[in-house]
Image (tube, rainbow, N blue to C red; front, side, top):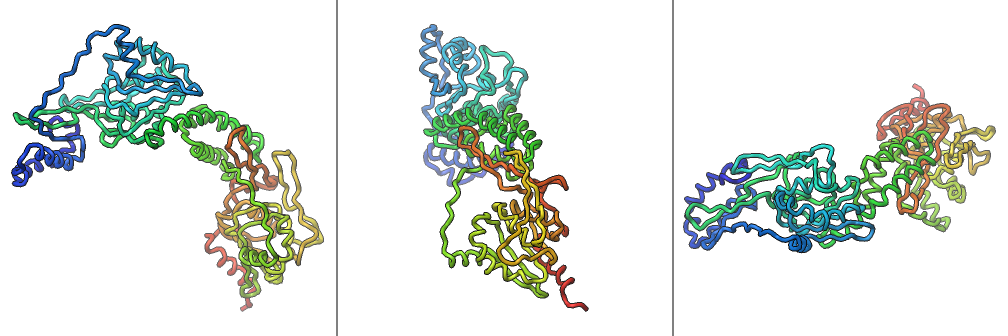
Length: 581
């Protein structure tokens, strides 16, 4: 084992060999082949390396590498045409299959022919699919050449280090600054196809290009082979040990593809890899239009013009820097775009979305509506005649208007005659804002119309006053009785607009956590001719009296953990409305 490439893993090997040498069961194995299998299993288990193998081969004749006789140009052309498959697929996608990685010496000899027959036909393509599914052999000296054709020439890149145990030397492999012919532009997509049969140097190629973030790997996990394997005769016996004598150490990861294999970025069956790669290339061809279209929509429609312009500019910068060159599916594109939009804007509501049509309104009977309302609202009257009302979503004005009398009778009338009220919005996730003016109006008097908020709509460039309503269904709570609103980090959207108004106008005390920092209900926009959709907030509240709540949330008057907010609110009211001592 003096030639094994990872000597640090040999701890305990001498002891294991000594134990085997004194084991009567091992010593009594009658034939060489059975003994070889037992020894192989023991060595592989001790070192945790399945590449180590002991064989019994009394008739083994070492393979002598054949020297290729000089070939005529015509013969070279024939050899290359049979060993390399080239095609230009629909959409100007190049397809290249190589089943053996040529070494430096051979590559230099056939280089001009490779340029004419293969490479110069690949260069004009818009993307390249490089098929290594059948590549099981190769020469490590060809690695720098191959990788260099897909990287930049300006700087030398350390792509691999190969440690050779017999000579105890490490060879640093770097990209080449000078090549025969042109390089494949780094802005063009490169997809490598792999299978469980991809082995050895082909794995090194895939691993290097993957970790340089130059290629996307599609297919199956590779074999987990070796840079170099030698078959060594054990003394004067007919036993041989197959030993990996060299190992690859990637400078980026500090580890290797050997034994473990290369894990694809997109794992699919080998037979599906080409079709999957074509889909990825076609998707990436649409990405610039998606990003530029998204940037334009945000710049033109986002509620806060300066933020919209900033997001649009930064988004196009991410595209130009190659940030979107690794997307492999519509889902991954949407996920990345959403993440970038939220990061750049600080707005959770600016994101990709689906374009699911709204469900048609259900035609419920009055009895069903009553039961739904009982489930949707929770009321109580605490000690000292303190009312409690909880609901977890705002409804659309027209829908609420149609059942307003039912809500009043079965919900509102239970709390309207209390001396003070706790309004619990800790679990209210928002909904439409069309009913906000009406709900706010219940907490103000009818003799004076109040400007509740001013809403700026970026899509129309207009500002609309949100006014209290002069007429309501049922009795008002009025402006004189105390009101505490409970909030949490879940309180969002329409609920935040309501809290914002009531706090701004001094009508309620806010107790709990800072709210979610969501937005007015966003609009859905289609990005160009694609099936990508954006959720864009287009309306924001008046900011003349202070900073916007959108994106930031609303801070409570009394900050307490949301789960303890009700207890704090009750204690406040009990102090004011309880029996005087």
